[in-house]
Length: 187
Ligand code: GLN
Image 1 (cartoon, helix red, strand yellow):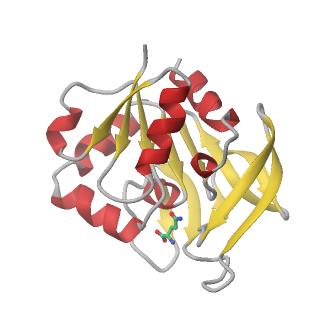
Image 2 (cartoon, protein in one colour):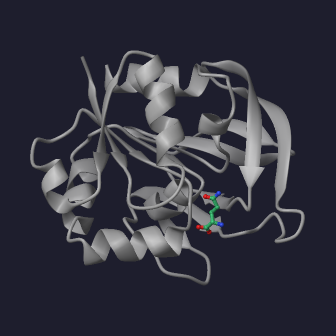
């Protein structure tokens, strides 16, 4: 059975654990560096506040380990703030892990009207609900990065090899298609 490490220092990690556990995966919370001592078959970087999570993964001494795992091919799913943690460019802001060839703009859908629902076709999954909460916008998609889903002509989900990331929150809806897709990546 796959062991999925879910970054649990801040944000909406519980919903990912529930979603993945419901699909039969074994999840553990990553709260401190030693939680990664046993490795992981997959990683989840949840939504929340990317500035807070980015600071905590550095302060807690797990930045290099996480970055190394992603670089060495461990499947990772980043949602919303998790996408920002992965992005190689954060417009006007600080880059964190920087492993995913995309640029993102934080809170780009507007601060007041930043939360909205839509649906979209997700390649390999089908029609999925899209739940946006003060979401980052993907403003550039780099070489070798595949767009899996668009909303209003803007990419909202991408994949680059072992890295899957999206602007929206699949863990906040009842649809499990995207979590199933991620578990297929984990194998
Ligand atoms: N606005 C948050 C950030 O910039 C992301 C919001 C979310 O994860 N729902 O980090």
